[in-house]
Amino acid sequence: MTFSADSPLVDEVRPAANHDERRDERSPDILLLHYTGMESTEEACVRLCEEASGVSCHYVVFEDGRVLQLVPEERRAWHAGLSSWEDETDVNSRSIGIEIGNPGHEFGYVDFPQGQVDAVIALARDICARRQIATQRVLAHSDVAPRRKQDPGERFPWNKLFAAGVGHWTVPTPVGRPGPSLAPGEQGTPVEQLQTLLSMYGYGIEIDGSYGPPTVAVVAAFQRHFRQRLVDGIADFSTTDTLRRLLKTLPAI
Image (cartoon, rainbow, N blue to C red; front, side, top):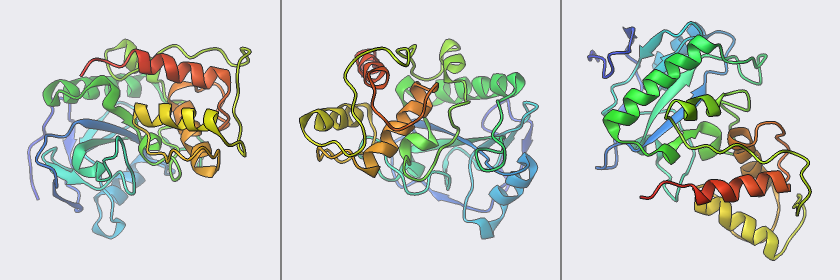
């Protein structure tokens, strides 16, 4: 399939094999950020383009800032997998996916170079402007698939994106500040309230009052995005206060 780039920021079009029609008549309204999670970004591009892999994405951003487009935005790329956000389970149909070159946790997770971050910001701003994607719907893969994924991870500079007008953010409450805390194994109304707040933000979580592995995974995903200094799955005061303040600053719909 040959196609023209959707963004003027694209350096190369390299068509991927795996994509299909979007299954939702609404325009894509989620921008989903990943890391490639392989030893080299070029190796990841090969995998994202080949049919046997069963995966694809719309864009890849290399460490040096080069931008490749693999799937037209009008098509449904296969990047989110089993996932959900705000009760939507076909995240692929509602999203545009950007893979950011980084070896990830399995192959020696490293900081994202500034030139790469600048390229992600520019591309994200372009996509969000054209598609009118709300700031709170610029998400991490780990946000929509917290039990399976960690990317783009706690080293990704969401604060820099926010400063450039991309995504939703608040300065996290400092770690160690005294206050109520919830930990794995606890049950009851306070856990149910925590799960309700996470669900209100958009996370797919059962509100059952039990702080089991699913809740640990969602709390850790929240921390990877919004409270990156410590990712431990424990809802300390820093985590819950940051969550409450984010909810208060959600843009009006």
